[in-house]
Length: 232
Image (cartoon, rainbow, N blue to C red; front, side, top):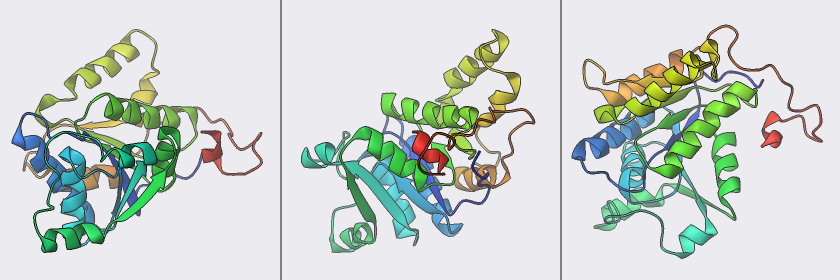
């Protein structure tokens, strides 16, 4: 496995390109973006300006953080993904915040996900839809397969990821997930002080997998490169 990144220089945040039905989702996204910036941790995300994507990115950039968006050309050409208004583009001051962010345009969804993973020392899952589910489960799987070993923190705001928690517990109970492999993801319940941002940073920095978690496969054995990320 590649080295465990407990104090990552950048974190990939997966989240919805829609705002959700409760304003709490956006509040949590903004708190996470601001906390990452204050902790000196860069943000890598899907490149959109709408929904929770836009919220976490703008909050991070506004607080002085480094923000990198990774967007497929097909989505860029269509005007971006998501629903609701483009966030924080009301005036020149807001546009100046967006101007401080970096955009990387790629050709496919697979390239997008690989680029985001390579640039990140950890992962955070905010509420989102099918794409967010797939991305979060994929990086957990990469932990299990030994492609990388990085913290994955899922934010259970408003109980949104309670079904995922139950699904993992059921997988362990029914013998499809090794008990130790349940530690390859942290599902973060609401913190006592309601400070989601600091709770996420703390969870990223203190994560340790259980002994015996994951497979110790060497993914560079059959690769021209010695980088295990070439396996994806």
